[in-house]
Image 1 (cartoon, rainbow, N blue to C red):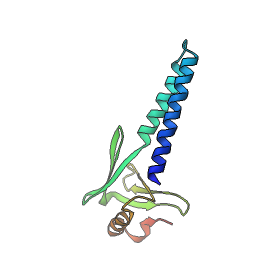
Image 2: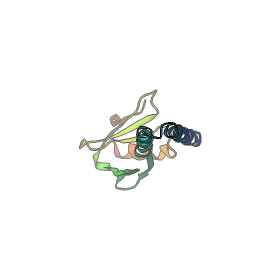
Image 3: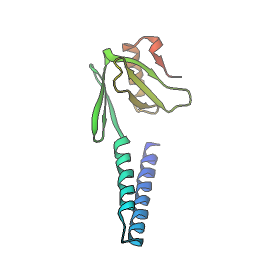
Length: 128
């Protein structure tokens, strides 16, 4: 599933490049709007793309492209929530710091859930 989504994302980005190139060729006097739109879409894709989740003895870490790493220490983890129809789980911190977004289809989700159950009270885990 992840590979298919990655291929679809790159195909859509390639299509956007082709459209921007055609618009630029069609109006050589003022190519800036098409280049600006393409740059913004590329920036949004790069910024929103999350990188692997790291779990160790100190807490949970999630790296991101071009943005600071999100960190929540085990002592600061308040809860994890996700709805029955949601594909995302959110890990919240007690201090109101950054929440970490995790896919329900994460490889190793069993280990993440086991670590959360070890460090959290039962009421703090609401996955369904």
